[in-house]
Each structure stands twice: as C-alpha cells, then as structure tokens.
Image 1 (cartoon, rainbow, N blue to C red):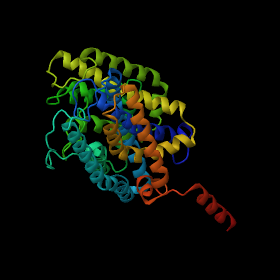
Image 2: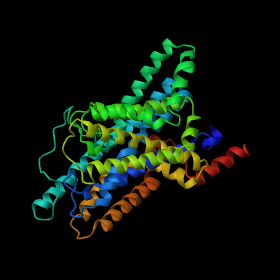
Image 3: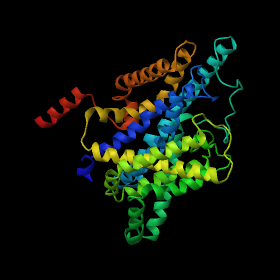
Image 4: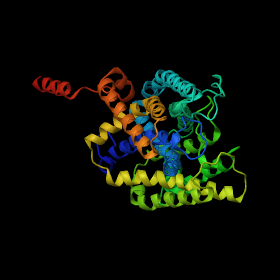
Length: 408
C-alpha cells in the first residue's frame, strides 16, 4: 500500500483526488448563473450550453468520489487512533467547522440575495425567479447550504461506529469478516465494480419520489433530515470506501481498469444527455421504461467516472508533489469559503454586459485567488488551519526547530 500510493502517512493519489473534488465545487457553483433555463440563483443574462453541460457532468461524480474517499480515510483514522481518538478528531475537523462557518455562510448568502433582489427591483437587472422571503428555519427547511456534506458525514460516522460495534460483538475474532465480507468486497470491487455499485444507486434514483431526473442525485442541502435517496447513494460510496480500506489492493484493480471505467462514465453520460437533453428539466420523471433506462445509465455514469478518476490517480500520481499537497491542504478551506466569495463576485459582475466566457473565468479565477491568499495568510498556520487540517509551522520556523532538535 505504501509503495503503490506514495508511502508515508499521506496517500498522495487519494489526497489529490479528494482535494480536486472539493476544488471542483467552485467550478460547479460558478456554473449556476449561466444555466440554460430558470434556476434559483443569481441569474445572469448570459446563458451557456457549455456551462450547463459542465454543471451536469460535475454533479454526476464529484460528491460520490468525495464520500468514497471519506469512508476510506475514516476507517484508516479509526484504526490509527481508536474510537475515542476518532470521535475527538471528527468533532474537531468536521463538527466544529460546520458550527463555526455555517452562520457566516448563511448570513452572507441571504445578504447578497437581498442586495441583488433590491437592485433588480430598482431596474438594475434580473435576479431570482421569485422574490419570496427565505423559508423559516424549521427542521424540514433548514438551509444547510453547501456545507451539507459536513452534516451528512456526521451521520455516516455515527452509523459506521454503531455498525462496527455490532459487528465486533458478533464477530469478535474477525473470522466472518475475513472469510465472507472481504471476499465479497473483492468481487464487488473488481473489474465489474461499476455494475455492482450502480445497482443500489439505480434503485434509489428510480424509486425516489418526485425525482428530478436531470439533476441526478438530489442534494440534501435543505432540512435536518437528509433525503433518503442521497443517503443511499452517498452512503453506498462511504460504506464501500470504508470496506476497501480493509483491502487497499482493490485500488490497484481500479488503476488497471481506469480507462475502461472512465470510458463507461463518459458513454453513459452522453446517453443520459441524449435522453433528456442539455436544458435542465424541472419536472419530476414519470415512472416507466424510459426513466428506468435513464436511471440505469446515470448510476453507471456515477460509478464509471468515480472509479475511473480514482484509478487514474492511483496509477499516475504515486509520488508526492509539493504543489499538489499544498492544494489538497487548502481545498477544505477553499470549499468552505467559496460560496460567499463567489456570490459577491457574481452579484458584482451580473450587471455588466459581458458574455459568459468572460464572466465565468473572472468569477472562478478571482474566487480561487481570494481563497488561496486568505488560506496562506490567515489560515494555514493559524488556529483555524489547526482545526481544519492539523497544526502546521511556517517553513522557516520548522527548519529552526529541526536544527534545535539536531543540536540537542
């Protein structure tokens, strides 16, 4: 495992993919104002078919990759630190940032939307399709914003610990896991992994009530009780990542088949777009053969992209790269703060009479620039960085401390 993925305490290939999935969140949300057709966001009068397709494709695999790797690294952490250390670490790295940053993100989001709506009412341009007041903060309507993934992770961590406790009681010596669970996981994670893993996703999507098929897996960003479809789809990814950590050699199978898996993902994505088109469909899918065919292709696309991207990283990114490691460290902070920054920039650029291919790179580039600068100057070596990624010392200070230790 150490040799194949880069060695040491960091698994460089998986770190890179996890960071990349978070960074793609900036690109994903930056596409929203430019979607063809109506949407609930800051609407820009520069719709783009290209960005609409990019939005669609990114939504297929981005969070499935993240949750699979979250499960993989969660079990690794548990094995290293034990239950008590695991709980303490997750409360610090996941629960604390959620509690700290959600009020700030939500306040900025509401303030910007009110500002843009007020400007539009005065003739300054178009904005949200509806100027209705925000929903009350109830259990059903609680706006988790883009930080929903932290909230859902806490559900998965709790469920994994409970399930692990029960299994440990029933299988104290680990014989059942070694003789039954591990062989089954090896089969599921083998060359036909996208087919096996797509089955529960297909069922969850097809039987989802009022499923908006064009938008794929429904994001659980509203309500304190996550929707069942997302829990199943992302829970499968998290749980399978947890099980793969018991047998990391499975990652080498994905590395071997990365191109065929990625090809499957691309093929099924094209098939889905041919079935529903490149314009967002805002009506629920009607149950029937066509919907089942679409759900099947979408589920295969989810796992083709997911395993293809992870497999490619395992094959080609085995060595540590300082720049990639830095970006991976920064990605958590960047994902947390990007929505407020992105919204402000989109609101400022909205009235300008510019095409999408001017506005989009401006908003993405400026968002990344602000986020990276703030990370390096305010976060990386501060108490905030210690919460998000662990304590880090500035290079000069770390070098001096190493010299002092060597002198002693």
